Image (cartoon, rainbow, N blue to C red):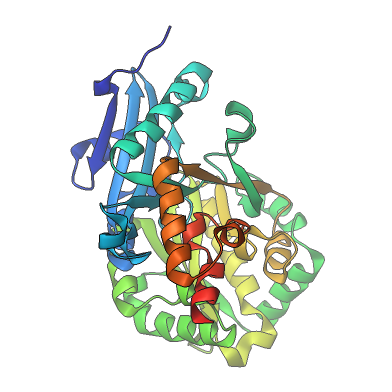
Length: 371
């Protein structure tokens, strides 16, 4: 019978050599890099950490951001420090080695140890976004009730021939791409730092146009910090008569290219140059030997909104988008909900009806507070 001893479970801070040593042993994405966790920790005012559970060549690795719950209510009311953890922006997920994936016994023990370790650290809940590609088989290797299905995401299969990639593109997108070429638009990949100001202007204009939520507004300091990703960061642009009309950032790691943040100038919106940008990005990614160009899904994982409809026009390849929602300390979790309800003069049952996790951070609570 397999057992996991104390030395099999390690909490890592961002400077631990074990962090990168672990990533070098298993397929990963930019979202698990310590540099990326550091960037996100600064942005969210949290602490970047990871839990590593291993036994031989079996590896269970989870990077996350540790957040103090004193923003829910005062420390005096809580009585002690409570924490929760969540994923940085993107899809960090849970990274497993091949031998871990093939061992149901190890996975069961590792998940239990993960929850136990979090509880010992004073963490009452965990919300993790899984990686649609690296974690695509989690619905099969874990019990069916472990994760929540939030929707689907889209990726382009870069192992296909260029002809098949084009054939899997919706006819309307094909027409738009060809139209952009006839208009003289050109797409290329450049260094982000050389076109920083142009990108910032386009991204800001786009967020204002779509009335994006506050979570999609990133300041200049954040974008500057992305330089730390070095060769893993790329910028694709489309130009018209030497004017940049749309742009998007991409991450690249272990055969996976991830679309990050981008936008289009208002005056060129009707020509849809972003179609040409994504077409260029997939051919560029294929030429570099990558397997996937992952472009995400609809808002909140939706498969019915216009954003998902647009993205799914580039590929037939879809992935389930799962989240892990754990209450690691039910007593502390319930206590936070009660304290927050009391502070807002709200009913705890009303709060518990929200699908948001963790409940004590539900937007519904904010609406009650504002009212």
